[in-house]
Length: 382
Image (cartoon, rainbow, N blue to C red; front, side, top):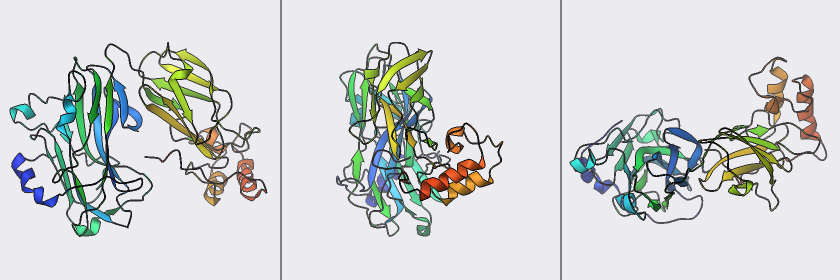
């Protein structure tokens, strides 16, 4: 973690300039929730419902910053402090805000840049990350030491982490809070290897709804896990028809209309019935998920979700069927249990055999073979 004084931040103001809104696939900075009360969410979200007294970890992300091949060398992002009190009552402030920032002391413990984060923007290269936690709106600055290490975005929606902020919802909080990054001159910007601004720069806000006196259920995990791919070739041509959700509280009282299912078509599977057992909620679908597509199941109130796919033959779960899947099956031991059966039992006979590799070959060569890649219009892995 690194911090620096208000004087140092103001001294760097000449390095940053204004930004403008842009369309999809343009450089985008976002503020998103990654955990609630110390429990990680399945994936970052920019809309969530919480209760008074809850604590959240927010992260600043940047994505798609290279529409013309730009290489990112430096960036700065500042939290808009007006969002702290933008609800009906109460506040969502950085943790220990009164004892630190309001008393003109740094709050390094709750506003920081984590170089060990797997999604860290400048991972494994020399950089200078600094954070100002004395200004009311915390500022995050990061500069690469060598311009030759500047980073190119894959332009596929992949998020890279730029900073972390721990916040606490006050006990008297209520209403909807809009938390965001400042997009005025000198506040938030991205620069390429030649110190030229990367424009336009789009911003995505975080919407936090505080439901007073209400237990807000959240999806904390699932089986199959989010991002999993069912590689089996079932007789009905579909994938999983059952999903187990792990929630943050007892699952009793939840109903099917509290969830939405999306697979990019007009007729996705529907929930046939629910089965609650403690914090485990089993969703039985009216049919298996559609092949060659991602299917996302979302708890509407909390905006938490899990996303699973079906692509017969995609053993390594990379979103495509290829020779690599055949080789993985051909080389693995019959007793190899490092991968779940839903990835390796392609012929769907309950066993791992050479027949699974042959089935992948059939899928690639058949006249009516499945599409050999998963559609990305619904889901892009983070």
